[in-house]
Length: 378
Image 1 (spheres, one colour):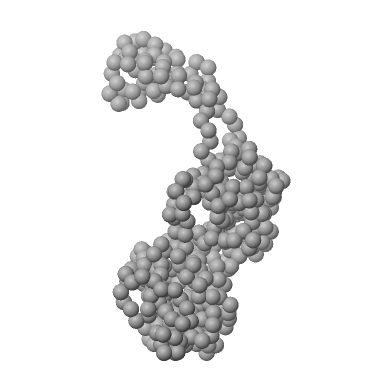
Image 2 (cartoon, rainbow, N blue to C red; image 1 turned 120 degrees about the horizontal axis):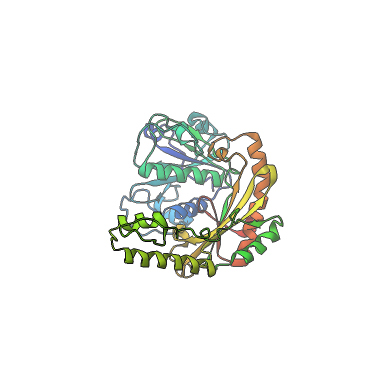
């Protein structure tokens, strides 16, 4: 970001009651805009003095800033939705950072306005985002929680921090704490083909299959005699009989017919099972855990992918996830040193698998916060 910007109004008492997004040197304002549009469908810029939420956004240019302020730099308003905005960027001096408890590397900041929605005291347990630590007495809910989760995700992506209003707690998420990736594509590949693709990046990959196969009911199951209303033998066993009786099928001949249809359907499914609608591939990393690739149809797309021509035909999500030996450490704000070491060694495998899948099926790659990534940056 350019340093030709207004200074953060640290003397404003209201500033300390609002959330702040602090950013280091080198982060451009357009990056913040793209991350906002990645989470908030209608995110747009508007004049800082304009309270009309419905105004169409105008491009952010140096000429526009000069026209608005007569050459004096002014903050801009990035509207996330009807209720929440970011105002900035503001210049943050070292004295400002010290006064607000921000890291010395913070050079710019956005002032966040959003509703104050608080619920009950947070439950004990994992606190991956640090929000339980920041709000120990009343956890954010609804719109405030949504905005705070985005702020933490944006800070992690950009190497920044979030200063929470009222409490003044500073959250500094680890940029390397999120390594999971997802490839969104309009192309479906069968499990065997997907396995071959993953094995190019991780030769030890294997299909995730059940530990044992189901070959149908045991011989004679469901055909033993039972004494029903007529005292005659009936296929389906007592479990099916009781279910039919429960649903009002009192006629023994009708129950017999339904039981035979169920047996015929089971036989058909065993002979010609339907094509897989989802599958998984596993890569064993030994003491570092494993990488799991899960393929399935996806209906909840990141905002930046919604409405694109290729997503209208249906989208498949190939999710590449790291699973450590101690899965509960994924929910810790500050996991153990051993966890971080294993994560560092596993990240290249996740990236290589995602790149191989993207090369095979096309589409887009997103991180676990639904922020899109350039494959060349992996």
